[in-house]
Length: 222
Image 1: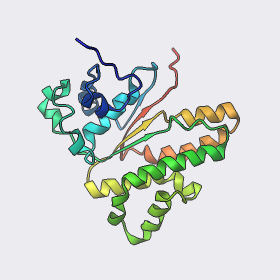
Image 2: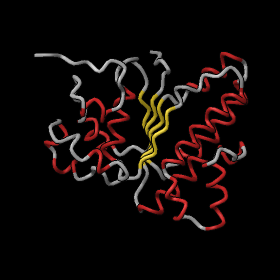
Image 3: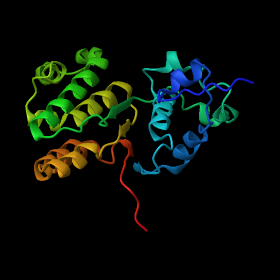
Image 4: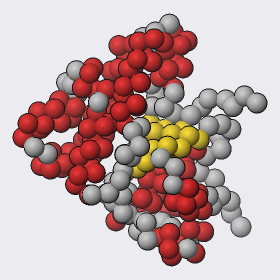
């Protein structure tokens, strides 16, 4: 039997579609549904597949990816639990990875985050018709990368509120390597400024209204 490893591939759909060797961790979906916690943090070990797991969760829960994902789980462990398969494709999901925000100064870091938010809002560009005229200008500034720093800090909360209103469902927010910008800021000497921004950026999105899962590179100390 040929073993086909998808080295460096962390997109769940690509792993399944190209039949790469995959250690089935789909029962994590069942565990999360049963857990019910509002905020979850997945720290190390490294190379444990945390990013791949987040990609898996996105494809499973996302209402916007349901067409692409409808057959991805049919031969995996979670498919043996029809009561949990009912959750597939039923929720709005926001997925954001901060792993590339390893800049040497605050302005470059913020520019990197601004680009990520611009891409995120481009993915949800159709939502502009779902909001009041008074908020469309704010949406467009985030969409075109011209939002102020204060507006950028509220962007995840803003998108979450729009999605919750449209779908009338709680939001799943998946944040990959949320602490990478803070690590870089500590290394290059702008920790306080970055910490202040991230407190607003993530703090607003981590309200208990939404379901949030974070992947961190922080080491656990026992």
